[in-house]
Image (cartoon, rainbow, N blue to C red; front, side):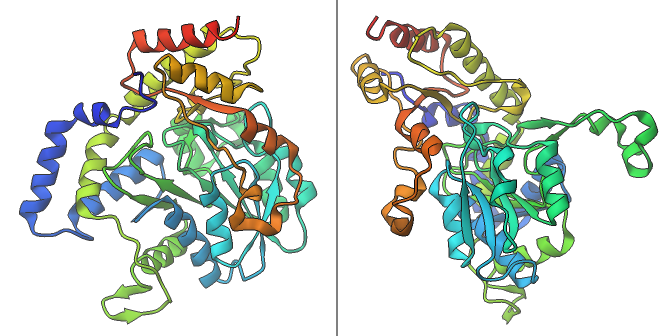
Length: 388
């Protein structure tokens, strides 16, 4: 059996370091909000290129906390609208509705499956206050047009970066005469920026299956906004900055010391692991030749970390069965679009044909940093042989 994702094999690579990290935490006698979390926050902030990282319990909480903080800061209020892609995991939308904000679903681009930025403007109303982009499947969803819309309309941009840690957006080249001050001093950093540093704030998930995965649930918020970081940190700790003094009606959403220690071990290998995933994706794209399969469209390889390798085919269920019968495990991301879920039954009559097409045709092939060349070649062979 070729596993969709072999987590045991992934973590075996770092087994000795992970065991030592766990032992260090156990021996320290300090299990929450200690030095391990602080060190991971500092290391992740340096890696992403932001001023602040606030570790929290999971990726959904990261997004909930950002929105809740903006409400406490009077940037948002109940009933405000947030532009969000119709094609996403439901957690993106849950974070919005949980804060009594109104999601405005916008169709994806069929070539990237990400939010179609060209459609944003027509969905903006006087109640729109933010855009939540999702770097879905590991691919950057960003553009100069998006930034211009947000600036012109005075909108916050929040990144759901649960799937794309390490992906990079290539910045436009500016003539040297246009560089000044801090930009000039940071000339070497102007070529790219990592997801999680592009918008006003970003939410991360370290669910075990992510490219940077914990051995349990964990998440984080990144931002360059000092006040937002302060409020998020307080909200994640019962609304408290000082023990037993509660400024806000907060949550309990904290990363524990063991998960922080584990993540710090694996963060050092993230770029290398992402490149291995890209190599698998390259082989798939170059060698899958089935006429009924639409492959990912890649314009910039560094802008995709292939958390998921997605194909689209009208014969999805049959192909999945064919792969299973030949020992290849696949998954569907995701079988039911958010607007067709019972949780949002008030949207069930909505017609969003591009999102619905993706959800009816998407199939995810095995991809990871530990899948072997022989396994990848076998997957391609089985896919190409289907019904030909």
